[in-house]
Amino acid sequence: MTDLAATDPLPKPKRDIAPILLPVALALVTIPLIGSPSTWLTLTAASLAMGMMIFIMASGLTLVFGLMDVLNFGHGAFIAVGAYVATLVLAPFAASIQADSLWMNLAVLAPAALLSMAVSGALGLVVERVLILPVYGQHLKQILMTTGGLIVAEQTLYALWGPQIIPMPLPASLRGSFILGDVAIAKYRVLAMLIGLAVFVAIQLVLNRTKLGLLIRAGVENREMVEALGYRIRRLFLGVFMTGSALAGLGGVMWALYREQVHASMSDELTVLIFVVVIIGGLGSIGGCFIGAILVAMVANYGGFLVPKLALVSNILLMVAILMWRPRGLYAVTSR
Image 1 (cartoon, one colour):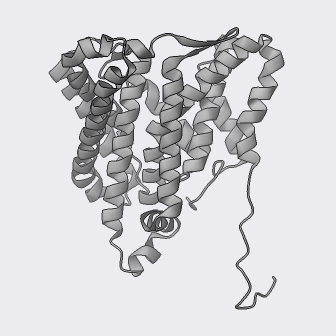
Image 2 (tube, helix red, strand yellow; image 1 turned 60 degrees about the horizontal axis):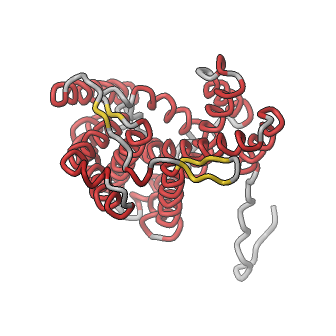
Image 3 (cartoon, helix red, strand yellow; image 1 turned 90 degrees about the vertical axis):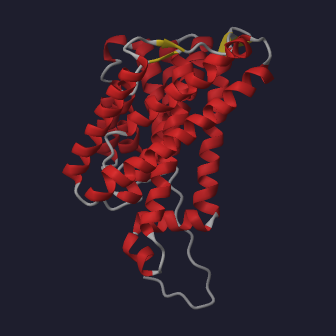
């Protein structure tokens, strides 16, 4: 061990760039396998857009896992609720949505997304106070309570909107593709990538450049220490839970527009995917969650194109491979 003098600067932590290179390596490896450069670029763009949407939905859950040590199996309910709330805003403005004006489309989409985040965040407040608070530190009860909450939420949506699938068409200006030579990149996927990157940058700035972020990261590492310093960790928990719920609501809106439909069980297909991303990335790691979401989307798109029969299990195989390499995920920040 090297002794440090009081005036010596603190040693900088080593940068671990191996996980960052994984998506790049995977993309490069698939070029000769796919053959056509235009097809490869189209699949890569689709993977990045899908990865950004999954990241938005999974980022809140990884913080809830990492900071609060809460197994929230009801996270998918916030996704579905967010999508349904958006339909309430978009339906009366169908003419504006179908207008061939980007600004008119965004003028309706933005309030719909914000209201969805607000309602999902408020629902997160209720869930944390009613279902999570009594069972902190009791994982089995957390699984039972949150799974029960998910079932109640789904059945409530069925009761209010019925079992039918509700169409949620893309705005007119977001239809079609940008054509670059032989490459076609859907306009909505470009928007999804920009929003996903903005969310990632915003979370990183809050976590790394603000006092609130410092407390959150300290809470992930050692919650007892944060409490000993006089901060109310429960309020921090509540804020993180509401933020994670709001992000899930935003992700629900984006996924519904991506699929152009909404139904009460839409979160069923996403829940497993989100948990795979959180586990791959490492509990509590936003950077790991970001890379994990991109990897999952790449494997789904490349795998679906190259080996369709393996598409259903490709993400499970990816998770097994990652955990064999790093048992605590790509960027583990907790000891759990």
